[in-house]
Length: 309
Image 1: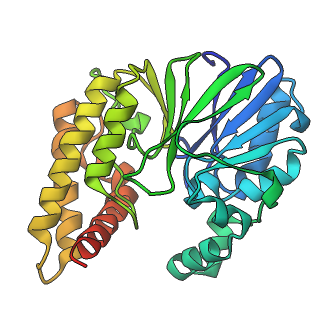
Image 2 (image 1 turned 180 degrees about the vertical axis):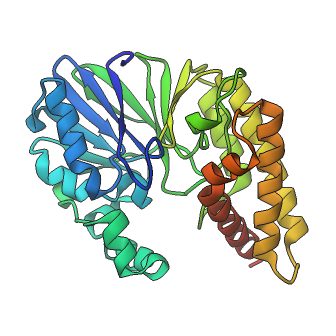
């Protein structure tokens, strides 16, 4: 089921319903927003075929930012899309044209074996096929205008995409994470993402306010899917960003700061999930959020250390 020609595609990164790419179809032309890793390329091409489209019908690949779960497969996908151009933030463009630093950084964290297993090939994109999206950049998909706005806070190389047709944002990681397993009768449950290494709380809150100023009807999150009730979710995100900052400051200077951060974040999210009426028990919530808690703890630590330099 799609609305306004927008299709949610599961890239199958790490687990089901964790990492989405989006396909927008307008009058026989198509655009992808985010693409997952190179392992997702067959799935994305299959999604085109299922809708009667060919790779040559894709005009754009927009990557909200260059973290590998969003853009790692961009080079491999672009090889299959002869007419597409890659739209990327000015700070991210060099890493798409020459991904050597991206590869080196991720390999240092994950190791070569895990890189191959989870992320696959990270291929360069020819410079002449790259379009740099400055703040306010607009593009046309068969006459359907898509607007890219600079939205730092999660990463300095992040933009979000406004689709006036559906009155929706494609938010990458700026509008947090919301997994369907944590939905309740109240709707979606949302958590900010402060994953390393460029978390900036005040910038993130300003970016969220900027998105909400457009009175959107929905947000399309990479993690995961379409959510409505965006004003409530925006308030929830800002509350949690402030709480995360306070927790980080309280853990700073502790002998095992990382363990303190993980425990504090877990307690925060469990309390909020319970108040939200999530159907999963505490063990289930921990299981769904375990990786994000770990990454958020690392990101808060980076922020603490950067802030004092």
